Amino acid sequence: MNDTSEIKPVIRRLFLFTAMFAMVNVAFQFGEVIARKSLAATPLQVTILTMMFPMTSIISIWVGRYLSGRDQRPLIRVTGTIAVAALASGLLLTTYWHLFGIFLVFALVSSAQTLAQTRILQQYIPANRTGKMLGMAQGLGMITGAIYSAVGGYWLDHVYHGWQSLFFVTGLLGFIGVLALASIPTRNEDHIDRFHFRRDNFFAPLSEVIALLKRRKDFLRFEMAFMLYGVAFMMQLPVIPLYLVDDLQLHYSDIGLARGTIFQLVMIAGIPFYGRLFDRSTPHRLSMQVFALGALFPLVLLSASLFDGAMQKTVVMIAFGLFGAIMSGVIMLWNLSAMRFAQSGEDVAVYQSVHIAATGVRGAFAPLMGLGITTLFGNRIALAVASLFWIAASVAMIVARKYDVKLGENISLRV
Image (cartoon, rainbow, N blue to C red; front, top):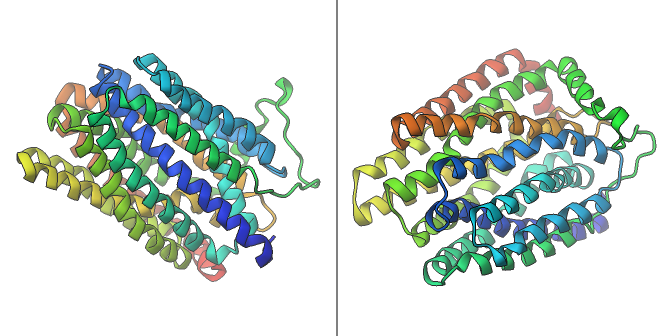
């Protein structure tokens, strides 16, 4: 499926999906702040929202196995429609528990979209161009997300119950993205043993995951090091909205400008850069550099508490600009690393499902760890501890790379 006549329309539809779902992500970022600022959610309730997407990602083990060897369009149509319908129901949102339901439903069915995007890249784009192509798609998404975040923050500050219309419009935009993604066919491969959801084979994908990790110790070591980054990132999830609302007392427009617009504008420049760098590097080498840089973000954000007024807001903007530079590298690693481990003839969905499912493992405890630290010692200490985990992740990736130098050499030769 690498013929130019096939690739161009696929790229256009993939770009459209990325742009639409960038705005969906903005709505969910606002959701955590809306819960605390307007729906009187407790710190624990905010934490539960931040845990929703990582914890439910564990089901990607089954979804990835189901997609393997199949044309994924039917599943994308069903799961995508359910997801955006839940989001659009925000038109009637007045309580935390309705918001909880939106997060839960969307999280349960959205892993199929992530896996679908990776399979499309594998099947349509040459291996030495996947980083560049994903970078271009994500860059477009960052532009739409940055604009949407600035407009959304202003809207929430100036319109009574503005989150209701924000969620409804976002649901409609998300549906356009679903239609675009569901229009891209993937291979039906009869030689692959297809998985069916039945009671008697429910645990089969788990057995296959265990077998894969035993067989590919290099992939296991990479995932173990990547796990530490995930702990650092997810510890921050409940702490950041609590810190911005409770400690710094910022408005929706300030938070939207920092977490959405500034963050994503920096990513617009960062993602194409890291996309090209990924095509010329190895997952290990790039990870250890990005994770080391990641340790600075919690510390810069923490320093905002030392200032007042305009200076405080400026430091927050700088912190999220730095975070944008960091996460543009993480996006490449998170979306494409599994493709470097999948061997010729293997469906990357199986590897990527393990990668996503690991998010569910750390999502079950890391946000609660962040909440525990912030409850006992405050948001500022929690941010400092998160910085230490970023450093630990970088060191762990250095160790993993020493074990797998041959893998790195093979990857360099291949790309």
